[in-house]
Figure 1 (cartoon, one colour):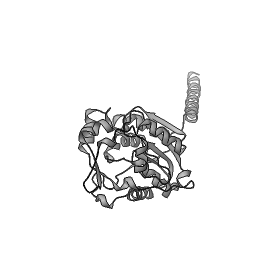
Figure 2 (cartoon, helix red, strand yellow):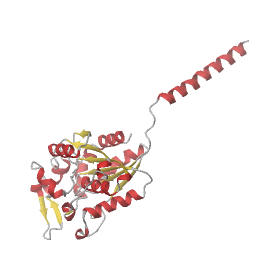
Figure 3 (tube, helix red, strand yellow):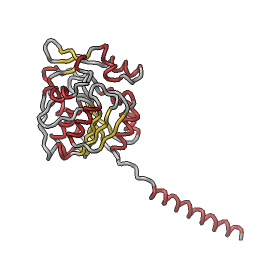
Figure 4 (cartoon, helix red, strand yellow):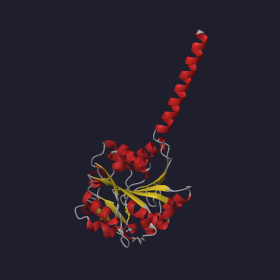
Amino acid sequence: MKRTIFSLLLAVFTGIVFASCSKNGNDETPVAKPQTYVLVHGAWQAPYVWDAVRTTLVNNGHKVIVVELPGHGADQTPAYQLSLDVYRDKVVEALSKVEGKVILVGHSMGGMVITHVAEKVPAKISKLVYIGAFVPKSGQALVDLSPLDPTSKLGPSLVPSADQLTLDVKREDLTNLFIADGSAASKQLVLDNYRPEPAIPFTTKVNLTSGNFGSVEKVYIKTLQDVVITPGFQDRMIADAGIKTVYSVNTSHSPFLAQPLAVSDLLLKIGK
């Protein structure tokens, strides 16, 4: 008799456990589908700036491609050979190797690049994400946008080369401009990886259409302590581009170095 009662209780308990597991499985929020994030750095920087963000995204089950723009990082393409079209084509090449769509992220000057890419291959992009980035209108180059931000502190720190092919940032201003709120280690990283910026791509205008660039969903992440692209000018570009989804991080111009977890969390949220 005792054996029969024990068997019945075991059967009931087992049934409850399986029912509970099934219920939890149905009620839990579905795991986000793995995304492919393509990350594009800005001017005077290189792929290293995304290292911490990349690690977090990968640890959350996503694929990450970090594009090294020609003339940056270890790439030695001569400055006279560069243009925004060259940058665009490098990103398009990276996208062509991905099955399906990507979330394309651009910082600062990288906003010009991802905009140009979206006009070229809109079908490859699920979302464009601008982080403290330029968002041009059709017919604009970066040199057309920068004068519209008169309170930016970058201009007075720029030093063109004798041949006008590159632009330097005064070394004494570099970390205050790009990562004033960063750790000593992150500031040193910026100094150690600094290279003069190719100038010609700043003059390339983008031509945009509603059917291509206009068809891609856009998100903006504002950088609230930014003195390179000021929050007020970011608001103006957001409004001009009709971007509806806007987040913010309370950082300087380089949030992926100052607060990489905050940036990663937002990108994960955007990817859901």
